Length: 77
Length: 377
Image (cartoon, rainbow over all chains, first blue to last red; front, side, top):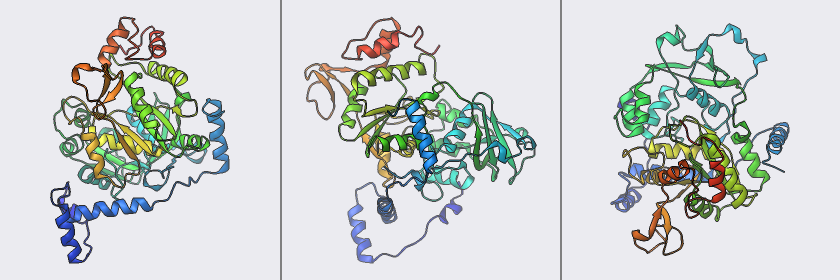
């Protein structure tokens, strides 16, 4: 759908040229089709690694209600 | 436990007291769409808060991601025709209704838009062939899509509710059991020995196993839902440690989108609180539309998925090894291998016989045979 629109969904970042050249060499023969696809992959990996463990924001009452149902259904003793 | 997909577990519910239902226009929706509403409201589809807008749809189709870059591979869409919309416009609030599920939900219409069915078929299903059941569904969709947030008002009690846990409930359950790493196993059949081998192999390396059968519309000859649940109850009771395996159902329709659907299935299990997801051969495939391991390969596109796939290739019983094996661990020729044929097991059970214990646990087979009619007619 609409290639023109699609272009607006990408932006440009600057990285040192020697690094770009190294990456280009390294990705030859791998599944990465471009420098951009490789850098995107790495950044997504890094960003997701930074995410902390879940700290579910439910009230104590909610938690008790859920535990009660789990007990009633036999999931918890 | 992993964060819910997109960072926050969604709960979209409201009370009847807060709204004037009788003054609002109503849109009748089918059961599949009602299941989508429930999955949005209960957080199974987190981070979705409603049916998707054009921007998200375009991103999913082209890039397998939501417009905010969160991985998402299967569009969740509400289709309507002009007659149903009956003059409704963007900004209106409507009640979505379905009598079978006893569903009532509030929807704020944010966008009404047209779309390209062929592009969805080609990109999501990898084919425009109308014989593909997922493509056939897309072709049969109505011409307009309606995007907007929903809030569940009510749904009635249904069969198997005692097995139906929300992500909030499974997350609480896993926490109470002190499970940090949980592997999810999806199924649509009673367990044979091969399934048990896969589950126990994966379970060896984590804290708990989450068996999550997909319940819903089936085709004639499939095992009935109550048979699948009873057979798993029997397996768990007789062959699993009580504190290492739990089962609850997932009500959602199969799309048969192969690799893209494998990602979707993994995302739902991440929302349930699982850290790992078992992906077998030709996961969510149909016919010969996908390669046997396409559903494995696609995971390499998502370094930020937040759930670890556990890949299993083919497995069988090796008469020489005397155990269940897979192609990485058994050196013996194919002639020593007996495949776990679901079709063969069905035929034996259909004759009222118990399959050999090499194929299926006796307790599981006996449980199935207690049903007068274990198959969908």
